[in-house]
Length: 167
Image (cartoon, rainbow, N blue to C red; front, top):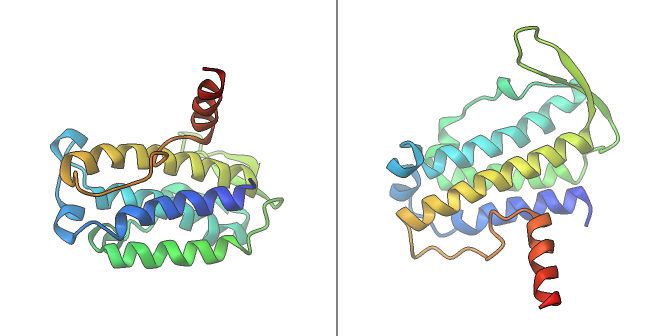
């Protein structure tokens, strides 16, 4: 599977719960998640994808310059629309393009990287947040169904499949 397909897949995973969750549960603070909301975690990974797509033309990526758009974290329909837009944009992204990543350290350095590496980072970052969201969904919305692989890294899925084959 190529990186574009993997990115599309994790975004489809996010759409699984967004189609099912109601607005109240989407914005309700979850004490077990340090009072963050499902909407806040969703906005967070969405905006990382947006940074990548929107900043590639400038050949510099700064994930700290996210918009922090409160409508994404407060409205499931907005989150779904933005994800759909990201999925369309991913079809046109040049994975080989070299870019510079802002480090947000005291020295404010840029690191050479490329779009493929940053897309891989976004995929892993999203999986991490989907794993957190899975916990939040089980606490807040136990009736919402997500796939068994929701929030699980592809390497973990392959490892578990291999274990099953060997038993």
